[in-house]
Length: 211
Length: 211
DNA sequence: CTAACGTTTGTCCAATCGGTCAAAAATTTG
DNA sequence: CAAATTTTTGACCGATTGGACAAACGTTAG
Image (tube, rainbow over all chains, first blue to last red; front, top):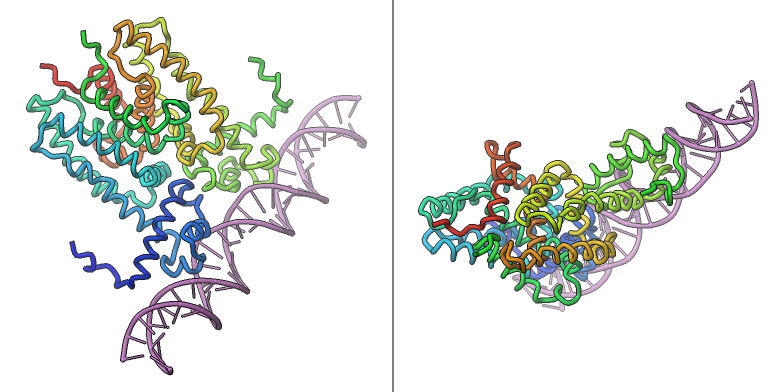
């Protein structure tokens, strides 16, 4: 992993300022969407003038693209770690837990991604049909193996992965709604632990009465 | 439900054209978001000139507001129908099924709603903390009753509702991703039936092996 | 027919947008 | 130090935006 292999040579200031801009852009893009965000907003959030920002990223889309590229790697890391060798139930529990932690700790990243997908994924479609599909197919095969071995109930592995994505990311993407519905008492910091408990039961036990 | 009670008197043409605009705006807003959509786009999709559109809705926000108000009612209808009297498992199954059907038949409405929530629900926050919270609390109480009666396993009713929302709406909001990952063979029209089967098993049986 | 009213459009406007450019300021290099 | 290079900025530009407006057009009731 030599970071200087293909990356353009950059000065210390360039590295720092680019990070500053990307951090500011994540904040702005994730709450306003790409078209809803302006370069001025990002520049102000990054504490610099618009032409100065454009000195580091020549087009608005370059910022967004850089952000999305970085995002996808970290975003798929938990799924990559789903291991064939470990105990199936433990592996799934850990995956759900890690995804929920990411929703809690990186909600802006989740919303940025959701925004992109919602609008038809115009900028990352190739990645979805390529890298993402490959990874999911691979992990679906692992899960299928567990099912054949009788370690977990038989279901559709792809839809299982979808439902884990949906339920965990919901706590980042729809956070406003979750907090509004739970109200002041239950919508506080404890909501993620409640969610973790619930999701664990849902995926690992189901709703069937235990009589 | 007298529709003429508070509504301004409208001619036949006004009724028709307003519907035309709302239909066009649903299409445009749901794929581009509020700020990403232009009045020109909506006007063109509705087959009229921009000033003509502005004759029926004086501001861009008025269109969006009207759309959101209508949406919320139909969107919450399935939950409203969750009945205390019916058989719990059947009621839940039907609710999940109806929500999934809505994701299939009204994906634009789902995406419009998701767009609004994602961006912090600036225009419908009061509705979430008011009408929506009341409804969810009410239905959560119903579900709690079923749990006390031993009809379904004990869990958090609020998070149960969240997870039903998340999993079903996922097939509308993240449709592009779902289709990309499933690929050409499994991403066709059958994907909703696969999803229905999977979700039914997930929520009603769980993943525990049946040994 | 015609006056009144409802509908449609072309033209225009101020504000905002993404982005350019040259020149000033700061930093690094020799 | 001074020259070379990098960084920052103010001023500016053309395009797009939401919206205003008056004039033209269509419809209908008397």
